[in-house]
Each structure stands twice: as structure tokens, then as C-alpha cells.
Length: 186
Image: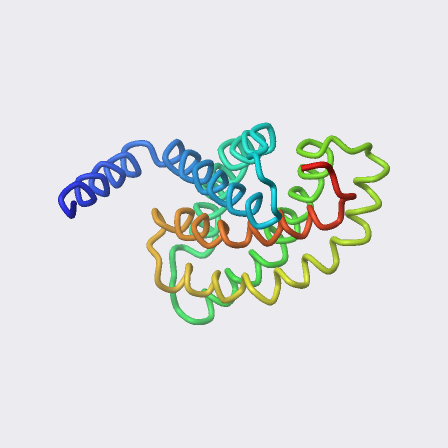
């Protein structure tokens, strides 16, 4: 069994080296799927909502993986790949003041408008009411993840590390977004 896992990891690392954007997008999609399956089960949904799952996969593949890929490359260029304490702190601050608020905002809109298909007026009201609380919670969690990511994780693995942690965060966001909607027949 160990050799199968080792071969799988070697193939994955080769794909990451040869096709970094595609590999990160697929990884984010797979982790988004896992996150949503867990979130659906935790909310008591008996039969998996495949449309919702597919839309979460699309979000991971089309947005989360590519955004993370280019964002981390950009930060490394801006800060010239440095890993000293001051630079790591600056990267965390930049991430928390730019990418974090944007990602939270976009996810709440995507979830309400696309996944749940609610009217824009309801989505807007929900975002207005819930965004500050969700973003504040994000700021209590993600800076630590960012610090570890920028201090210890090589550039080519940062999106994967971030996506893995985001899997748990996605469960939280899905549960939070779902709890704000009227109960549907399940």
C-alpha cells in the first residue's frame, strides 16, 4: 500500500512541476468537493445535492486554484521570495487586507446567487448582514495559516497547503451560509 501512495505522490508532484496551474485547479476542485460533501452530511442532507456539489467543484477549479496560483506568485515577486520575519508579516497583512476580504465576499455572493439561486436582493441583504461576521472570523483564523504558509511552505506547494486548510474553512462557510437560508425539504 505504501508504494502505491508513494507512486501516486510522485505522479502528483510531477504534474505539479509540469502543469502547476492545472494541477492546483484540479486539487482545489477536489478539495472543494470533499469539503462540500462533508458540509452537506453535517447539515443532515440525506441525499447528496449533486448540483450544489458540481457548482462548488466549478468554483474550486475555475476560481480558487487559479486565483491562489497567481496570487502567491505575485506576492513572491513583490517581496522577492524573502522569508524573514518582517517580510512574512507583510505578506500576511497584504493577503488579509486584499485576498481574504475579496474571497469571502465572492464566496458569499456565489453561494447565494449561483448555488442557491436566490434573488439578488436576498443575496445582497445576506452579504450585508453576514459579511462582517464571517470576515472577522476569517481574520481570527487565516493569519496563522498564512504565517505558516509563507514561512515554511515552498512557493509551489502554497496553494495546495492553503487549499487543504481551506477544505475545513469551506465546511465552515457552507454551514454558515446554509444556516442563513430557510429550511428546505431534504
